[in-house]
Length: 417
Ligand code: LLP
Image 1 (tube, protein in one colour):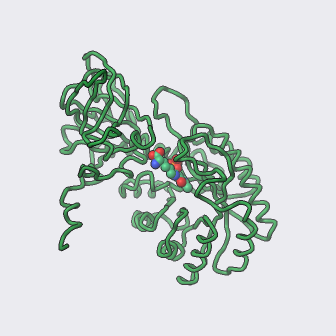
Image 2: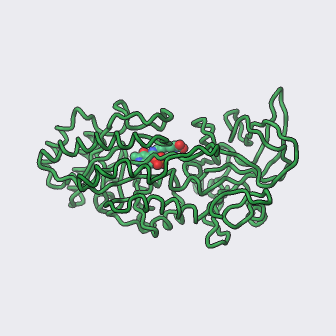
Image 3: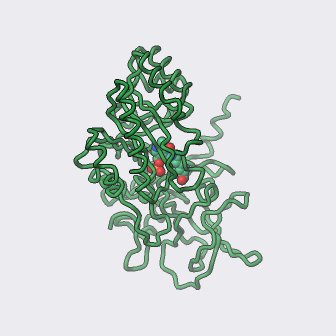
């Protein structure tokens, strides 16, 4: 099998390896465990969906910045979507082709813009001041900046408000009512070349029709802009495809269904389609593997306490996100409803609420699924829970892909002070 599944013997597997066997070999707990094959197949699903179009798959590095995973995606032919100068530096270290890199963000700093223009990556204009900073950066490094205008199509993606980004009142993108100002200013700047438009609706999208709604609006903008003498090449429709976090067997749209909603308009207008998937590229490849510390009851509630916490994986605490939880081994113990919590000193420290599980024993393995996106990338060292190690199955073998962070790494920040 590829990825995460329960074998006929009732044990949990990651590719060909039994998770309980992996746990015996990995000295740390908790740890992030990936299927390299699953990352590959997620990427290939996009590649296949885009067949017949001109395109850039820009992997959104914010979802997971493990350098080994980034290198792997780069080798598969992926581009990269970045939101900071450090992400740009890491993407260059991973070997991404600058012509397939897009630099996004509503608060890009002067040094980041200089690096971006100098590296020849595509840059989104997010506001009036951002445009002015791009002009300054282009003059300073004496190169032409290739830019896209980030426009809010004002399409509601129907997701959690924290991750909805394409509405008119969003902190991202330009004021549409000010489009003409941008076009007039860009025309005056020989060091700025407008090559496309960008929109990003939000994240965890489960209805692909919102992408075609947005694409139609964006193509109208392209026509309007081209009527002013520009010749736009790129339509960037952002990222945002959701995944089946519930594991309830709900059929979620595939990359093919997503791309097919915009295929004809992209072809007709002879555009290069840019997409920016993060979550749908990496989330399903990984689970956080924890060890049960103990089980307790308070009032009318029962808790499974594990060694992983909101420091290791914050999405449930931060967004009320559901990530599926199960034990790594079959069990005939009576089932009970538990809150699965960590050792961090606050009540928001939970990985799952009201989950029915066979009552586990201390030392048992418990995984939090779909942990490949926005989990390790958002991990902190709160309570000095140092960031965990990462591993993957590659060609059937267990391999470490990131060291466990150590307390010494923290202590080092105070050396000589
Ligand atoms: N492009 C832009 C401009 C974005 O802002 C994002 C995500 C993406 C692409 C990638 O979206 P994806 O395909 O991963 O949905 N921390 C939150 C998610 C924040 C998403 C931010 N922007 C979470 O854990 O759910």
